[in-house]
Image 1 (tube, rainbow, N blue to C red):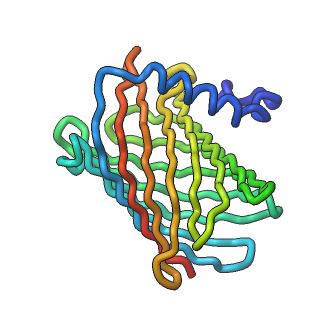
Image 2: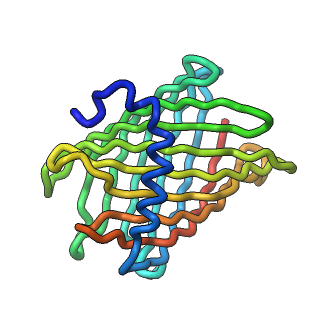
Length: 223
């Protein structure tokens, strides 16, 4: 974890995230896949400052023809100040690797800073994950997601986000993946809401950055 101990550097993570995303997109080449990701979740607001959520996600790749990934996730989020929230949870992942589904167990912690200005919302979320595998050495991963939320009528929630994923532990600290993500949330009926998004995912593979074009569909029940 030494690559994240320099305190002053953390103040510039949003700017670093944007800069890294631009370089990752520029380097992407060689392989392009089209994928479908479906996420379904339930969110319960236990207190004004505390909420719990459960989530299931399923992914199809190889031009949306092959089911290759699923995860189940449970966590809590606590809003300590109007612009600061902390959280934690556990994600159980099954991913297709060399013809077999392999399991990853992933506890995580999050810190989110958010502010509103002139109708726009600005958010940066830091997430620290411990990745435990039965088939490989354990490792750590840091994620930073920066998002801008735009004002819109009719309950629509358009946004533009960028997320960088940095792996470390078994190898030197290095950028592993970048996700550029425009999308829009929308109300459906009562506590049920939806979200549609596009995501460009660039993943490091040696010196190459193969890309995936993702169509994302989300549904959420909120109580």
